[in-house]
Length: 387
Ligand code: GLA
Image 1: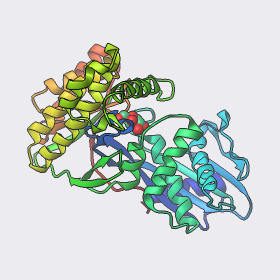
Image 2 (image 1 turned 90 degrees about the vertical axis):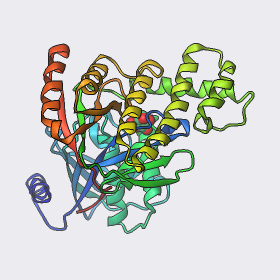
Image 3 (image 1 turned 30 degrees about the horizontal axis):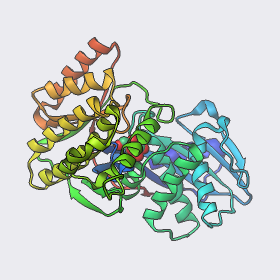
Image 4 (image 1 turned 45 degrees about the horizontal axis):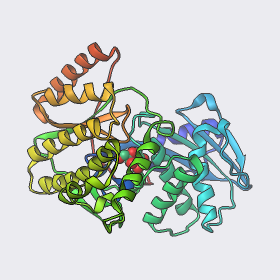
């Protein structure tokens, strides 16, 4: 892959001196959905597929970017002092936003560069292709300019770029999983405090299967922000009596005893998901640590149901895929992953039954939905780095 991207670079820009190559993964969240911005826990891991980037410094203040995934956009070029979000710059707004945020935080990026990227994460599938390219840019700038910025700061700057430059009000999970990923481990992250620990995903007889519904999911125009404000409104009502800063601080029991404070049925459902999903995540990590994969799988199924009925972020494609997956005899557990409204599900499947799982679930999905789902057996990889 490194050789391929260097070749593309020299074809596009017609030179090959001084090129450095980096890789930034995609991520899958195993459990803990829509909990990050509610001050709860998440349990994601970095994937072995992601975004490759080749970069070489220039002697002026021009930045040129080219993506092998968006050939029709050609070479996107701009001056380093002209960092505005431009619709015509399309995908390049993500790395551009990171440069802008780094500069706002006082990091003096003065020298222009040429960059080529190529990604093998399906776009819009909810596996964080955007956070992947944000961290790619952040780590490239940090390493090339020898800024020595702490990795968690780079994670926060990348999230800030997504929030303020792209305009998507996401939490910190995606950037954290991608920046901090570790081989064969998932990360239990407390999104309130950013305390985290790695937990080995040492499956012996099972594999992680990611299935893409192929229904595209637009985060910015989806109901993501609506869910955030519903939860914030529910929290405000609870705060009239309770001293809590986020829904993530509540146990199930505390929630049940105080939910009467929330005046509207919809908001009760949203808050119930946030509270129960957070507790479920802690139980799931404990089960995994005790090698109880059956309990882990059951909690995944419960998570999906809560996202379906209480949080209402699934939809026909995801529900069909999850139902077919969990009804297969090789399945240990299955749920949607990421923001929802389309994108992917994640399942734990018995190794010996994977081929039949993919065939049977795939055929039935096509029969019901009318087009194919794509399946990937996932490997957990490391965070963003030079290769
Ligand atoms: C998206 C956001 C994350 C998180 C998930 C839902 O992926 O970028 O911050 O909120 O949705 O868990």
